[in-house]
Length: 311
Image 1 (cartoon, helix red, strand yellow):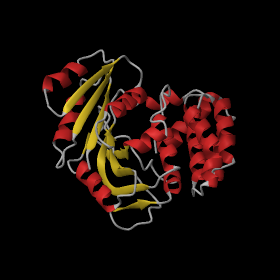
Image 2 (cartoon, rainbow, N blue to C red; image 1 turned 135 degrees about the vertical axis):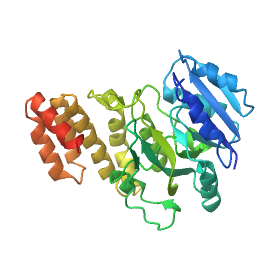
Image 3 (tube, one colour; image 1 turned 180 degrees about the horizontal axis):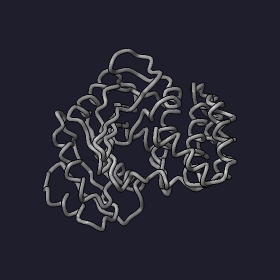
Image 4 (cartoon, rainbow, N blue to C red; image 1 turned 120 degrees about the horizontal axis):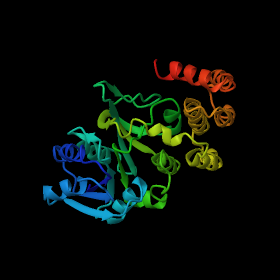
């Protein structure tokens, strides 16, 4: 199994060397590392160039966003499998070894992933909660991806996945022009067509930095391309018999509504929560949220903050 690693890079001078260190500390190395510099204005690009590592290929382009950088890396990839690592995340030293093990055990599957851990600035760590996995061993095939995703942290993290290049190209790669949640569209498209070979071992490290702690505010407007595409794909999911897709859609819409409440866009939040009510299994919670959405903004923001942040 030959693997091309793709690292999208934009203004990550404080983290890129640690990210690359985690790559070269792998028990089993990637076959190439493609760093796509997406128009960095700091010293990120030069730090990578100065490493002079023969496995690293540095590709430079004007700033077009993380999806365009990942897609460029896929175009440049020499091998049939591609994996991704954000320039401020890291891998456990056994990550690629586990990915290759999944490929040997489940050679028909085109999407391979492991669980992951959140690392916060406070020093706190939290392993992703993954519910409704049907296999009891560390490794297996997730046949009910959307059911799992509707009741868990996202099973797939962009820094803990490997995809057969052809399968990724067939679903259009990563959607360009979406500032937040773009990877969820790609995972949804893939999981409607494929199953997921998965390891419950948390070998990806999703690291919160000051630059991405406020990423949720990028979702604060009522423009929701992720939710729109999920709605458009619903008939396809139902026809394909994808268990849990409606619940997955309902959860996304509910979470979107909560984010809108957090930033004081109550009327937009209310529309999103009403949409969610048609699909969600959390209707009691939605009734409470809808009640909060009709309160004055200062009161609703305070309540949402107390319910979803302080707890």
